[in-house]
Image (cartoon, rainbow, N blue to C red; front, side):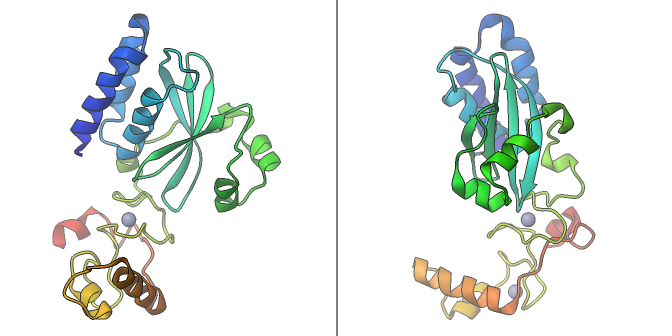
Length: 216
Ligand SMILES: [Zn+2]
Ligand SMILES: [Zn+2]
């Protein structure tokens, strides 16, 4: 699904989910984030499954935390503020801002206990408006990790530790797994194991900017 398809799917959902008087500002917000797949996943999730099952419109998106290409975003709407976990693959509803995060896996991943998260995120004004990943020079354009973090697996910017080429483009993934192509989950796992044993190359905005993709 292209960015444009994704945006059109959202606008269609909004025909039904947003009251007439809120349509214009809500659509302008989608326009502002139309180049950002992470925000588009968020809008799609929100307008597909309205948290209160009542018409609503997103007014503002704030970034509360990020780690390894995963973002905790706070979505302020006409009704309330809700928390979502978002990345390049999708968006997941975490709960109402006031109630905080219940998902133990998410809490563990970001390294806080439930009460700590409640306290940390209490004052929404302390947190910046979410910037589309493409405009944030410190983030990998493709998978949104920051300097020193490992790319999300399959990111086209990740450098191959064996040949220095593009990991998803060179042949090393097959030669390391001893196959011509990946035919099973087990072969892919074997490659990932070899990759981790060799040592993956973390994101560095200086070495691995957009120029790398063009060169590859
Ligand atoms: Zn990346
Ligand atoms: Zn290679």
